[in-house]
Length: 316
Image (cartoon, rainbow, N blue to C red; front, side, top):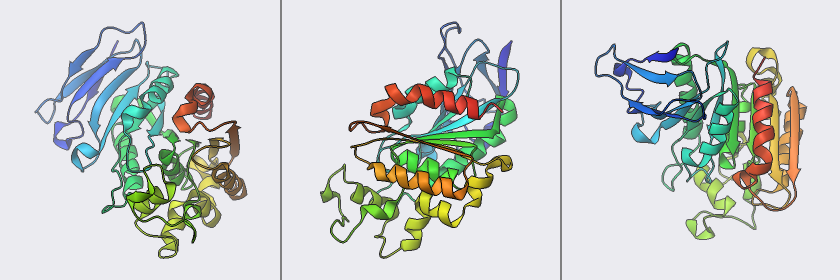
């Protein structure tokens, strides 16, 4: 039986639509496009294996707000959904960076939203626009849940590096049932101290003080409340209900990965784990790897257990 998805072209949610088969038994790939008719429709593919819908426009900011939607092989019930958020210091990267993680999740029977979001610039801070972008992607999924046979009510989030910060920003607000963050900056004010202040790109592309300053557009001494809002541990301490309740009142499961001597200090994961436990998250795991590998660099170790965790956490 073929999966058939009806989409209204008037909503302009898809600029171009194509599916690519990810599983070996699946048929050859084809390409479709949304009809100009308000009642136009598109075939997404067969139920033989996972498929990727590329270049889905999910917001009103044109090409900047695109995502790839991965649909697993059809199952007995609508598939749980995982939002995947790339890294890049809030100012770089794209969904192409996290395609391997998205493909692995889809192969495990999960629907995936692999999302691009507005990037921070010196003249346009990323926060809170990026969190709004991710919320828009989730809104798109809810609006098209029946057509895509997905269940956004069973939501997980995977974020890498800066994307881990954004994933946790949503997680502490009780948006998802489970959140996994790889090498996430969490306590953003810790990167700016009197001895280490950076307000220009001259600090270097891998300077976290510069990345944080550009993301928020100010120093913590000038806007402490903004830093607290964008730092998941601070939010969890002041708003514990998000992690304690989560969707359906069952609490949020949090898994943190970090290397012991990497770009993002292990103390950032420690701070988040402590705050999540104190806030009453239903489960908190922290995995510290030896060495200096950062985020996607340790995917060969972290990806399989991450996929297994999300599949189990979202199965209920």
